Image 1 (cartoon, rainbow, N blue to C red):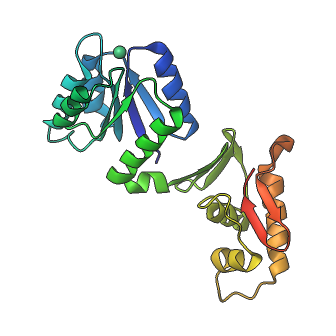
Image 2 (image 1 turned 45 degrees about the vertical axis):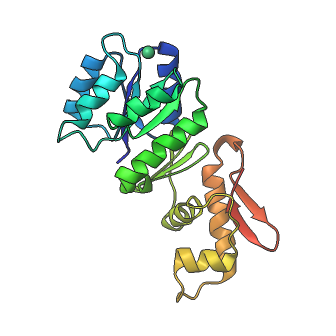
Length: 227
Ligand code: CA
């Protein structure tokens, strides 16, 4: 299961930007332009996170946040407030009504994403563990499906396990021995050359259409997921 995020924002360009960036990371994004509509969606869908703009056409994000946080069924949904104002007073006001975090416009995409992830990690840790992402490569551990640029890739069971392991720590180089222990299991008698065979298959499968090679071979050391 992927995390559902409700984005409450009336500025179209910001909606497009945030939606694009979150969807790229595998989140499902619902959008709403007004506070009234947002509360309706929140009650209906119970999203895993709400990104709430401070200034909405019909009400303020603070008001919507207050209504979320006084509702027993909704109060555990993390709320991240977006605001164009950066005065410390506003921040205090937001935190007083129970907002869980706060980002000031204009914001850095990476930072917003980090905040979103850390809020979801805190409230529903399993949601992020179900998904492994590196660049445009995605592994969905619930359905056991692998995607590159949203196109599904078929992998054999060992290649799937290899990728599942490597994607947990991208850029970290693992020796053949470490890969054998973690993917095949410690007591299994397999030659280290077997690792090379399966890495070759994995590399061939994920590097579709001669795209960037996402597996790095480090001579006399081993392999890592890298670009
Ligand atoms: Ca606004």
